[in-house]
Length: 219
Image 1 (tube, rainbow, N blue to C red):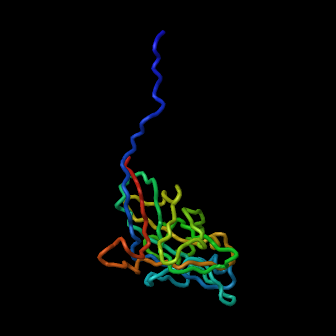
Image 2: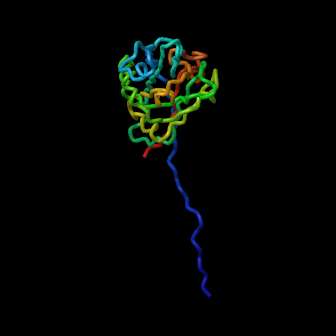
Image 3: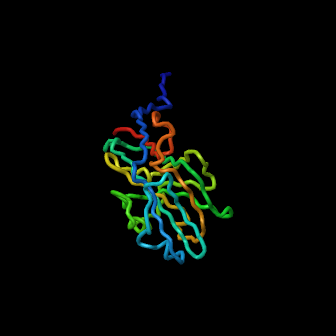
């Protein structure tokens, strides 16, 4: 009787080494502000009343005061030129340091990352209207579950990872699910922006700046 050798019941997969980079938002991040009555006029406007890139925080969401609605949409630039053009991005996380939030407790919104490429090269009031069509989520978190005075991580999905410009600058934008759905209910979040800087200027791992963590390997 002959001896039959069975093939091994496993296979060896060699994966390329993964590189991780942390990229902080550039100065110039901020938010676009529009106030109008009624809600539709505010939501669908082609331009903002103003922009703010000089404060410590930016707001995302919407709020009603009397008959007036105010909507805030934000943009964040990241210098992603450190990522090689032939890199395969396997994971990306947008981390935002929350200052505060406000929402209807019976129906809180989500914070949603959308394509911000139309905001380049710098925020201007017309960017408010250009973001109106950006409704596809690149990643989101519930505002109700977010943590105050700490970083909140938004895992970018496959679409979101595809928004990262390798070897160039990446613009991401932030809206709430209410804004995206044109839903006239209040809910907002305030986030520290790049101007806030570092807790310890000597240690650039401790601070408030929005940051993008990217893992990739080279093909």
